Length: 84
Image 1: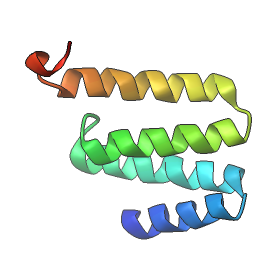
Image 2 (image 1 turned 30 degrees about the vertical axis):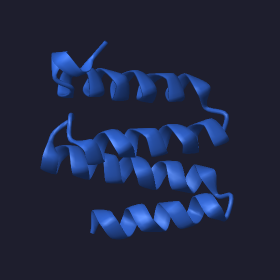
Image 3 (image 1 turned 180 degrees about the vertical axis):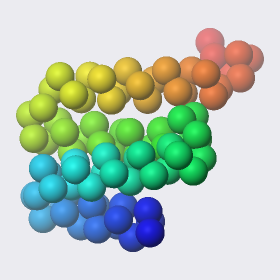
């Protein structure tokens, strides 16, 4: 179900319906976070897609929150020896 919603959200982005896509991407992100955990690569990728859709809607305050959450997840999921 999450995959179908994600693909639909990508189609909405291509159609320029960024607000609708952002809502759907937020739902997909919540589903994936519940299933896989906050640091799963699919969840982090979903955050980046959500940030792009929000930026297209000029919702920059929310973009900052989503990007910060994504970066925090990436830092905690990345082994220390991979970070320079």
